[in-house]
Image 1 (cartoon, rainbow, N blue to C red):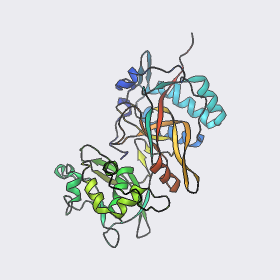
Image 2: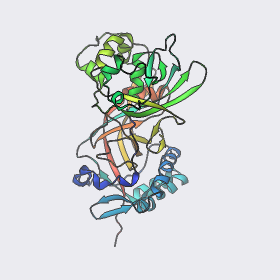
Image 3: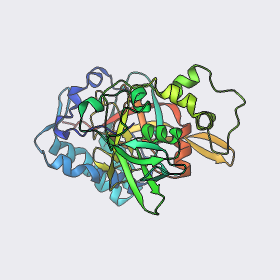
Image 4: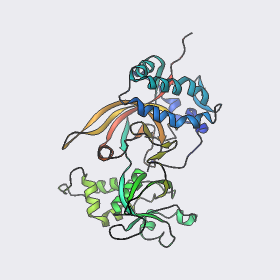
Length: 359
């Protein structure tokens, strides 16, 4: 899951993150010369945050040693200059980054970077044919909200009219829970977008990792092109998936939204929005991410493509824990699905700061 309840931007201070206060600035990584992604996506991602920051101009935004920036100062000294440069093109952006920006590492050691995407899946408003597995809306009764996954899978929510939509398999339902959002192509020809509406408050464990840990998947299990062995196995063996999903007490509820892939500031931007741990990284922060992203280099070959780009902390997730843990949103479609399934690399994350003025 990558979505939880929104919080006020004005409360998201760098000073609230213990790791930021401790992390030294590496003498070999204090500037960034350029960015590997298109400027249009950067413009869109920054634009999404401007109203939230302008709503509380005097609220503290960055407090790091002697550097104290309010929301308004953060806009004026960082976001708006980068936005203006991006609108002039890649060359102007690269020149500004090199001359006016310094980096502050967010972790002492390389972190772990994964990717997630916004799936489009088949579904129905009513159970029929292959559509028998419900995704649930959030109950108003807290006793129902607090039910564990095992209880829900055993029928604890049945009979309360909480079914939002039905999908084709337990594996598909878990997939939506993990990704945190989806577009449902309904059997009547219409579409709806879903995003998370909170969870039951229980701790999260990845059931697929538990399955792999226990060596339940045969080494020679057959797969279809573009399908992982784990995905193929749980699709073919829903009884095993039910057993392992029940071990993860954390359960997610959903609601409809007009947007595809929503975060804290609205619609997420492919290649620019990241999910982070807000205990270590302030929401909305402009960051530099250095890592690799899985991509198809040949029809049957997947390799890691190196990236070094500006990203914005616009989402969270139950599995995203720690200063160096990052989940990159990669959009929708087959290539995004591949990147989400196969991206798992070390990475570095830096907070962008304006260079100190010379006296």
